[in-house]
Image (cartoon, rainbow, N blue to C red; front, side):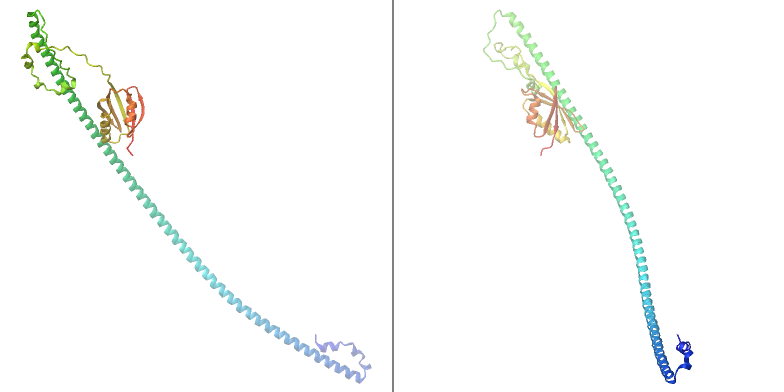
Amino acid sequence: MDIRSELQFSPQQDNAQDVSPEEEQRFTEWIQKRLSLYQMMEQQVQASIKQTVHLGSEFTKQLEEETEHLMARYRRQHQDQLQLRAALRQEVNELRTALADERRTHETGLAQTRRQAETEIAQAWRQSETEIAQQRATTRAERERMLREAYAERDRVLAETRQLSARLAELQRALSDLLRPLSAATPSFVTAPAVSPDPPLSIGEVIEERTDTVKPHDDLTLPLETVTVAPPQPAEADYVYEYQVLFRGVQSFVIASDLIDQLSQLPGIEGIRLVEYEQFELAIAVTYSGSLPLSVLLKDQMAAVAQMVDQHGEQVHLVYHAVA
């Protein structure tokens, strides 16, 4: 508020005619002092205002500069973040592309490996089937050859046996014809010297003896005293039985041949005949005359190469296992 206007409304102006010159002078001095004080206060207020305005402008300017620095920093950081985000997106895209390529390459490799493995398995399967078929054919041919040879040998032995039997029968008839007129002409019997009769020939001895070695006329040249007809001796009763031995798990014909050889060497085994070998099963006809049951004999003697399963009548079942 202006000091002059304040003086104009002073209540002392109404009573100015009652104031003395001294009082008026004092009042004037007081007014001047008060006016000086108000002026000084106004100057201080103006200075304070100017200083405040200056400080405010400086502060505002500093705030603007700091704000500008902060905005510039923010813009740089924002730009850096944008670039980093773009780089990350590009890296993610590259990783996705690389993963997709690697997945396709892996799937292609797996498919190729699978096809190759399937091809190799198919080739191995075909080769195995071919080898099995060849082995079966070889085994079948070998079995047929062995059977043909066995049958041919049997027929040959039977033919030779029949020839020898017929020759022996012919010799016996010739001797009987020679002795009949002698016995009719001589009333008394001629005592022959004690000559031990030859033991009857067995079938094996007859088979080994060839027909061209028999000389019937040699016996006719002997003296009548030494000619003696030995009565046929009864053959000793041999109890011989035929069994069928079946081996399972025989993986090759070599093993089958080895089993046949081992069986032929067992005590009481009179003869062995191959019946069939197919699909890893070996069937053998065995002629046995031992005292022990055949199953007990095979269980004891063949335990190293075969395991006894069971026996049904004349059939004995075993399972072959490789020697450890």
